[in-house]
Image: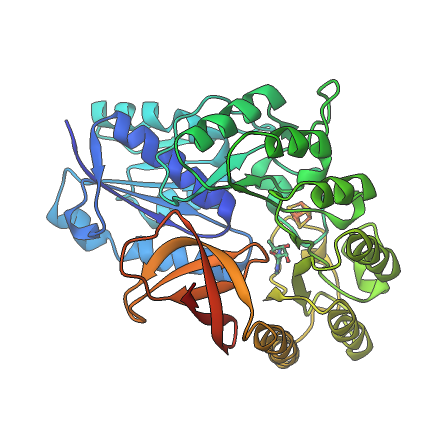
Length: 437
Ligand code: 5AD
Ligand code: SF4
């Protein structure tokens, strides 16, 4: 049996890549992709539970499928990923949405193909959540959808237990892939024509724990030494493990982009301690200083949470000051969302919603103003972008430069997958506009 599949992905890049793995399995079963959810024979929701609104989003969308299911009895609906992996959540989902056919957790991802086969044999819903710490997946066969970039997992899980974060509970303990397998995958991707490789892990800096001789700087070096023109990126780094050795490796290889994502979360030492981040704002700033010493043009992006339990006006001001001091090129900003089972969810002094909202607005305004100033500095300059797509609304091609800035331009031929030099003529917020030279 074959037909069409449609995957709805929530959350981070890790999930985007997991969806590529799900798509790979569906292709192996003979399904083809469709953008139209109504014509799908199998619909997969790859969920995220990092904040409450991601969960609510998924609930809303799964709820809307009841009608489709009633109209097509053969439709298979699967809900997987981080949401069902939470303790007790699979049962909640099963009760709330009895028409969902397959419920699976993050640790069952590699077994998804078998779950579909099982469902085809049975009228009952297949609910499978494996507990424990998760395994290491080598040699999967993702159906990649982000050419010219390719995502590559180097490790799974997280051991950090930041007090607000549910990831260690749903993604299991930190475990790394074998370096030779990662390098072989990267070589094959370059040979296949991919022009950018992004290494993925919750905390890439602690890559290699438990593997003799493996470390993140050494892995980066091995990949950067692969022949051919391509870019190398990685995410996410934990500041406590971000080392001078790593900075030196970034500085010595042109292929490794001078753009680092280093989530700070807060500028207040009191809050950082309560978050269990294991660095102070001064230690964080020292890392930035080292980065700028070796790579003066390196841009830095970050994640920030406002409204963590007990965050005072003074704590928030410390965050604003740190943001100004670092001069981030952009930042992902979040209102703290209590996650059941985490330490922070049980803390007193939860910050009122209206206070958090006012703080995030102020923070976003500051981040946008930093971005605007930096974008304006590009006007008149030439930058090399890797063309990654076409924007229908703007009727222009688009691509990112090494620093992560998006540039739009017109081109007669299709340059997707090519490096293109553009002269920037205009900057608008985060976006640059230019002409090919
Ligand atoms: N509430 C708000 N933001 C969160 N993040 C993680 N957990 C939470 C939470 N409970 C943010 C952090 C992290 C990013 C991926 O999501 O900033 O770096
Ligand atoms: Fe969550 Fe902290 Fe691990 Fe990042 S490092 S995934 S924020 S626990």
